[in-house]
Length: 246
Image 1 (cartoon, rainbow, N blue to C red):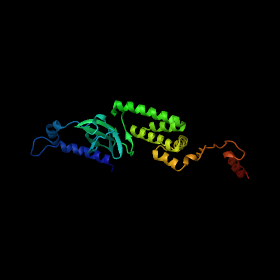
Image 2: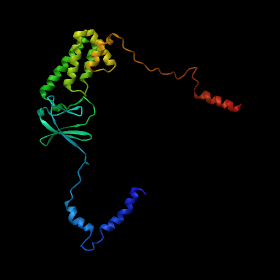
Image 3: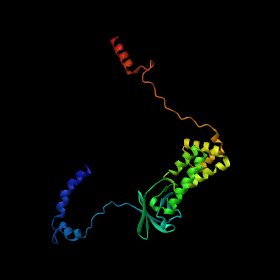
Image 4: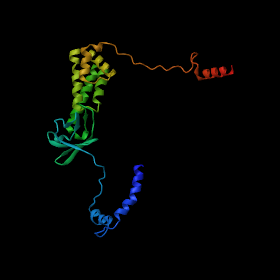
């Protein structure tokens, strides 16, 4: 018997039990509920209960906190402050002296950043804009490949701004030790294979892979619809009909 059928069978028996008069006391279970229990009941919460784990953390100098390998931003005013962290299944919330100051969706991506623009100081935003423009300008002097590579890194939303600037600056400095021409070819190779880390570009130069030609992209060849060697379904149907006639 299904659970729903059991509940349907029990419900009238439960109603009868609750409305049955007490033997030694006045009233019934239901009347006692209306008189004593119901007035004390409160409304159910708007959202279902979620288990949460609490911990304490200190806001870093870059206004981010490392939670299980991922970095979440908090308003820069709270740098070096000790905050309470509430970890839920899908969200992470930060409290300072009992007040909610920031919340983010949880991310399992290790070493990456989740940053809100409203958490950055204005001076940092202006500095970052100038730094990014300088990096793009410098990359443009090396070549088209370098410019596209730097644009890709700066557009990556999973990296913190300071981290992106550090990677681009380090890679562009490689032109001092390996010549701009070699760096241009290395970054073109990085674009081809989606390599956007400093170590990857440095490894290309160290192993002289920038001097090797890039593999050609494989273009899928579509088969012709009509050809003398392509018989199609009609051919085999005609063959079967001929066999049956014989």
